[in-house]
Image (cartoon, rainbow, N blue to C red; front, side, top):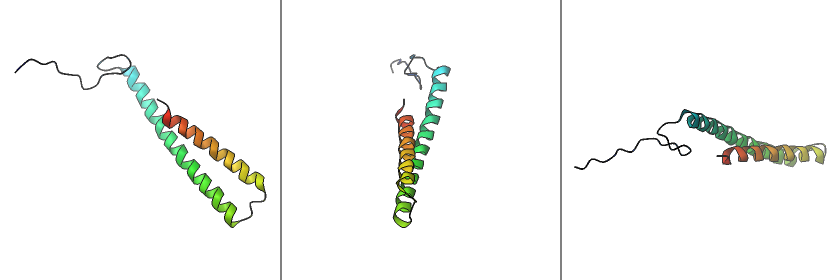
Length: 87
């Protein structure tokens, strides 16, 4: 058998170290923001469904209620999409 160098189990992509506590902190923050982004995407889907169903079955009292709801839904979706796609 030849003496082969063992590869470390974890190599930091940023600083090429075997273990980097600073990069681990950044990874855990990114994982948390990704989960919040997924949550915001779900909330925007629920809001859009609620606005759609409400506008079908009841009189919302005007277009402005629907327009403001759609704007808030779009803002929530964009924030969630940004957090999920962020590296």
